[in-house]
Length: 449
Ligand code: GLU
Image 1 (cartoon, helix red, strand yellow):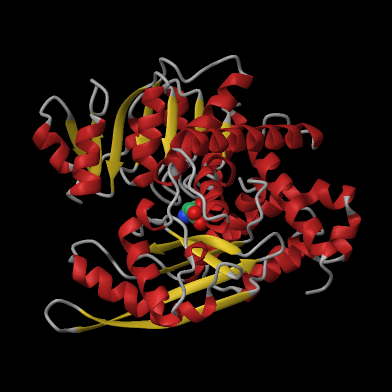
Image 2 (cartoon, helix red, strand yellow):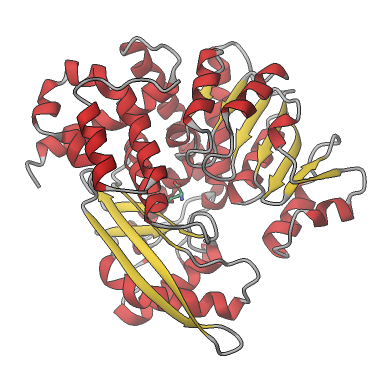
C-alpha cells in the first residue's frame, strides 16, 4: 500500500514526475520527503507561499559531460559524468562522487536531493550536491583510474571550488581517486586549494577519522536510538551489508562497543562468520588487495560464503544496510522482524525501499534513515573543511569526539522533531522535517534566488 500525499503536495509530486521522466530513484527520494511534509505546511504556511518545496525539488544547476580516456591497451573509452549542484542555501554544494556502472542522472539526483537534508541535519554550513560517472572501476588498473580521474577533472575543475562546490568520495571513489582528482585540479588551476575536496590523504590536507566517519557515525546514531529504548549495542548480534568503506568502519565501531558482527556482503554474495567477522582480514582483502569477498572464506575456512545469498535472511538483532540503494525490501524487513531484529540503521543512502520502511515502522522497530544515520561522513568532511580553512590538523580523538557529538545532536534533533509533529520515535518524519525546515527557512531568508 502506498501512503497518500497531502492534497497540496500531490500536484508538486506530479510535477516532479513530469519534469524528470524515468528518474525512478529521484522520484522515490522526493516522494519519501513529501509524504512527511504535510503538517509542516500547515504550521509554516509562509514556506508554501514561497514555493520552497517546488524550489528544493529543482537543482540549482546540473552539469553533464563526456569523459574520454584511453585504457591500458590504447583503446579509447567514453564515459558520462555528472555533477548536480542541488542546493546552496546553507553553504557551498557538498557531496560525494560515485563511480559505478549503474550511475545515471536519476541516481545522482536522488543522492543530491538526500544530501540537502542530510547536510542540513549536521548543523554545519554545507549545501547539497552529488556527482559521479557510469565508469566501472572494477578490474581497472591504477593508471586507468588515474587517466579517467584526470580526464574527468579537466572538465569538472571549472565548476567546483572551496566556496562553490566541494566533492568527496562515495561508492567507487576513495582516497586514491580523490588524490588523482585533486592533483589534476591543482595542476589546472595552479592553486593548492585544500578545501575544494574532502576525503583527502592525511599528508595532503585530509582529516583524521574521515575514513572511519560514516560507519562510526552510523553506530553512534544506532546507539542513541537504542538508548531511547533502554537498550545498547553491547552484546547484540549484528549483520552489515556491504564490505566497502561504510561497512568496514560500521563493523569496527560496533565490535569496539561490544557487538558481535557475524555477516557482511558484496554484490556477489554473503560471508557468515559465527566467530565474528575478522576485521583485519576484511580490511586486507578490501582495502589493500581490492579483492572480492570470496577470498575471505578461502583464508578463513570456518566462515561460509552464500553465493547470491540474501544477507537479511540471517538471524540478527541489529541490521545495518551499508551497501547501496534499495537493497532491503519489504520481504527482507519481514524476515528481519520474524528473526528477532530490534533495530535498523542505514549506513548507505536509501538502502531500504519505501515498502521496507513501512514494514519496519509499522512493527515499531527503531529505524534510522540514511540522511540522519549516515550523516557522520559528510559531517566529518565539514570538519575537514574547517581544518583546511584554519590550516590546522586535529587529533583523531578530538575529531572523533566532534563526530560523536554531532551524531548525538542529529539524533536528538530528529527525535524531538518527531515528537513535535506527533510521530514520536519516527526518525523518517523527524529527519525529513528537521532538515527541510533548516534549508527552507534559509531559502526564504535569502529571497527569490
Ligand atoms: N558520499 C558521502 C555521503 O553520502 C559523503 C559526502 C561528503 O563527504 O561530501 O554523504
